[in-house]
Image (cartoon, rainbow, N blue to C red; front, side):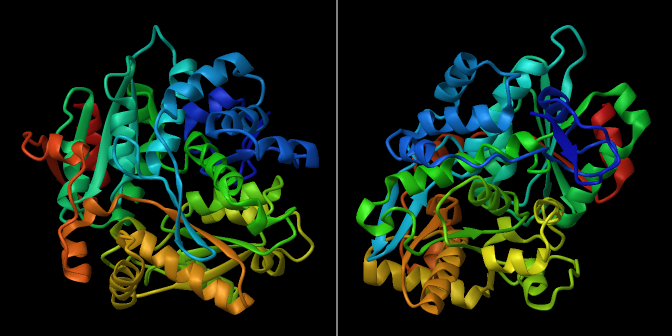
Length: 439
């Protein structure tokens, strides 16, 4: 497998090169050169396999032969050592709980796979590689934990000061060691812009090897394909039949890596009728699906803060994925619906689902649930899966306000609640980040 840039000005790269580059040299994002559909026999086999088996088969297909199958299987067994259950919420509606990893968010899954892959390809005799990650909530802690104490790597986590919850923040600011937490006086979009500027600074990169761990890195993108198939494999056969029945996935969306992985899953054979890009009021992509015009804008702070993104990086990958189609926008609309909801609707969904179904949603999953319900209603029924992206206890203040209960903290949050935090505060300026990276 080779990887090509969405910028189309960089030669195709190997898996190792794409992982360590992060963004491609031309500023684009790496994507697989080709996506081969699964056969009917392979789909039948995947329905019978656990997550690690599904991941091994799909990983061999998506990553290519640079990682031998036996090594890949061992790597995935080590990375994916926690459950990802599919829970019923109500008749025909399920939640795939992706938040049982060490930092209680879906990003643990891909981050742990990516860290192990990158460690295979890093230069063992060279200087440490600094992994830069911008986070709007959960990415920073997932990447920090995935690389914590991994030889040859340092981690620099950029986050918008005051715009992540205390639980989200403490999961990475209390680690220390090879992890540096940087509070930026700005928004997530500022953090993302500063990270891009660091990667584009050739002088800096000559002095400090840099790598990306946001979803701009193909190593973060592709492992997310695994759990779409894992969810489908767990659905009762009567609900999905032979793949002809209506099946909808709803993905809470911010930077759109998770959603892009779903579109890749559909392209290679996942029997899903349609995906839903569910956003908060930062609705750049749903607006594009309505109007055909992509208009990036400054992000707006919401209670589903990890989705507060005004210019999602992975939209470039979505466009690339459909660039070979006769009518790209119409075909994208056929595969993808856009739905957006404000904080009031999000709180209402959290309260109603808890009161009527006894199921507690975090604010991000609540947005996904709303998008799923809208799409199923528009289709006149069907089976739906919402991706549960974060543990509700990470948003205790929002839960108290919306539902009126105190979510019990899981052990991962209790462990870091009283540990000292180590934070560097900087303005939203490229030069300030450069100074931190060279320090």
